[in-house]
Amino acid sequence: MSSRGVAPRWSELRVPDFDLEKTLESGQVFHWVRHGDGFRGVIDRTPVLVRQRSDRLRVTAGTQKLVANYFALDESLTKICATFPADPAMRRAVEFCHGLRIIRQPAWECLATFITSSLKQVSHIKQISRTIRERFGDAISNDGESGFSYPSPECLAAQSERTLRDCKLGFRAPNLRAAAKMIAGGKVDLEAIRAFPDDEARSELCRLPGVGPKVANCVLLFAYGRRRAFPIDVWIARVLREVYFKGKRGVTQKRLEHFSQTYFGEHGGYAQQYLFHYARTNRARLTNEN
DNA sequence: CTCCAGGTTCCGG
DNA sequence: CCGGAACATGGA
Image (cartoon, rainbow, N blue to C red; front, side):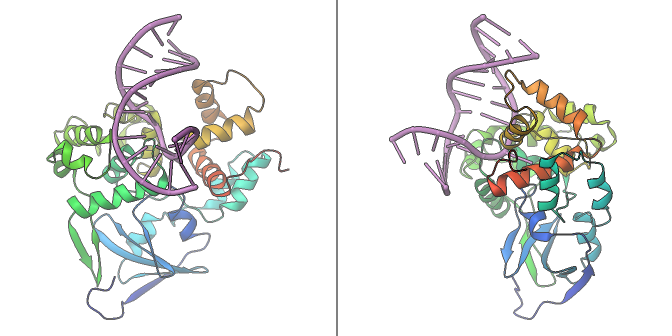
């Protein structure tokens, strides 16, 4: 929104191999909203308007570097996709998800948002994310763009459980509050985790209430750049069972986890995101379609 | 109305 | 380690 009533100033950057819509609508981030033929959102504490036309990205003036880093435009999708297994389902997902990038989110807002995501539909996660930003975040603006930052751990830790429940958090409210308290109190250090190996980082995140293996893997993948992290939610579990364990009985969670870590390779998290987005968008089986 | 959603936690085999 | 159940809320 242009709060000064003047035409916004733009910066432009070339973005080969990038699809803004797929990237923002693939269930990895939840606060961006469509605005005209683009999207309006906040990167850390900077409100940004983004619009793509073919390989050109128009962004709010002066935010090119911020945007380029956030959307990980420096990474080669060609090289990443080359490491995927070449089975039919994976190929279909790769073709469908051309230009989808895994972005670099701030750790806390990513973690907090995924704590609120458990057993929720994407549309509702978006609603909760927006409510939390509007009620507890700071109103911020930049070059005529405005928005709300994600509230700090200290801020959410200071809210009552009831106040948080009023954001339609349900049983997740005490989890979000307790996790915020642990981080605000230094019991878990989200910056220190950056230096940890994957397994240690995961177990450290799992110390937080409301954080299990799935949410921890989302944070590792979407905020810490750990590309092997492979979140297994209901959709991906379904895909794995129907595509890679077709007709087999007694496929346990452990079995799926082991398979995900050995089959998809060093960028398994990317492969997971492509399979997830393809399956969810098409509501189709990846199996028996050649 | 019923079913399910980018799960986690606790509990008894 | 494994399967079940409870947990809030709102779309489909």
